[in-house]
Image (tube, rainbow, N blue to C red; front, top):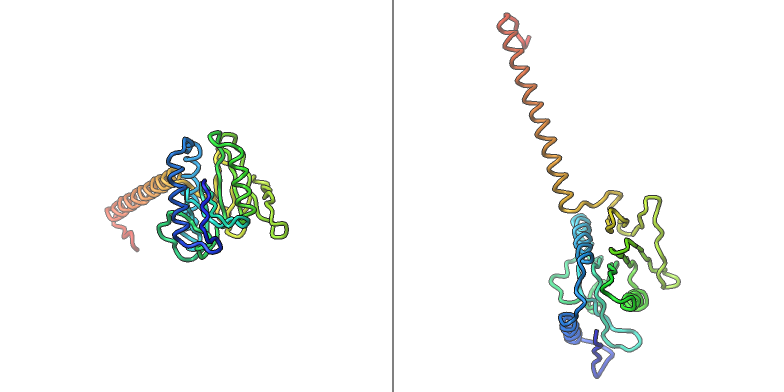
Length: 246
């Protein structure tokens, strides 16, 4: 994106960030690099999964395709990067945001996620990696290639201030331990676990609900049949002069 540097650079105002966000959105609207179908599908999977976590953890806020703006340390210019999904830990809702202006926000990005497809150049992803690691120092960074099925979770080392790979466990899952989440591959997609349980997608939840309702209906029918059989037996006992309640 184009860099925007005010004449007096040290302290940038909300107006500077608004101008930078609008310029970035204009450039994006003119770009031929549209979101590939696998990237869009993975965004939906991530958003649907992690919003289940947000329902239980009020400080866990999930964003999709939100421009992140910050002041580049060396040049003091406004720089931007746009993760596919992002998690910010903060107890109060941010409301409607056109961009996430890091210096003006009460919390910083905690986890960013990028989905790599053939529609973007490797150079772009390398630049994004450096921005998350060097400039923004985001604690966790997930890179997933839907085309190749490659998934890597990085964690920022507190000492070196560089990303280290979070190695998967025996189940093939890499952990974001601070929030009780694991990420791994299921049928070629990045999927998420919370407190050891796979976070189901809407279609999967609907199937589970339908299954539970069917099982409940079967149990009710069994109970109704048992009542009918008991009533018939009681009637036979009464006909024989035997009090069924005695």
